[in-house]
Image (cartoon, rainbow, N blue to C red; front, side, top):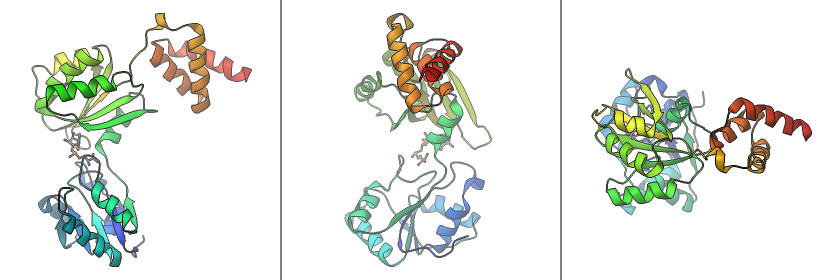
Length: 281
Ligand code: SAM
């Protein structure tokens, strides 16, 4: 395992609930770090203890002043500065963006020990399409601002991923069912990598009804599948064009799956058509 690291800023991903998920490289960078920039020193102290490390920690948030940022950048010109957040990948609904931007502007090396991220883990086990997705972090709490964003996202042919809290889940699902349509597929991923991990799937309408009277505990990722276009509106030419376009990007089975989802058609039938189109060249 590498132990000598060039000076710079290292974005170090940490576990999202299970300490065993810290990578060997993340541990090596933390061990080599001259400074660990943290969101909450109590949370990071726990991780460092788990790794048998004792390191100088410095609080960092994007609303920290330029002075704190400049200090970290100056330190990263001489030594190893690791940035961690409380959980998962820093910068993803967490502090770090302004630091990385300023470091790049100052010509400081920026690298990362990639690792856990709740959005990607949730997507990968949801059963929703993964070829195109849009991560949107936390929705605004104000009703009008939330409705504006959902209306903007409605036509996007992508799986939508949001971070959410238990107490807000029911209201968010109800707004989504109303604005995006109750029949859209969705999934609620909860307590990932922890003892009570679960993924509940269903239509937005069903999930809104289920969580109307139930406030789930723990941390949540909420996902909504792409809109399903009605097959009655799609002509044979539209379907063939969509298949040809998808075949340029994807293997046959995935192309058939994507077009089936998009037009609400049978996946096996489209697989046969896609195979025929492919062999026609
Ligand atoms: N940077 C983190 C990442 O890479 O996933 C996300 C930080 S954000 C402040 C925290 C939110 O991420 C939580 O409110 C929840 O929506 C989601 N989250 C974090 N850990 C989770 C887990 N174990 N299970 C489900 N969602 C989680």
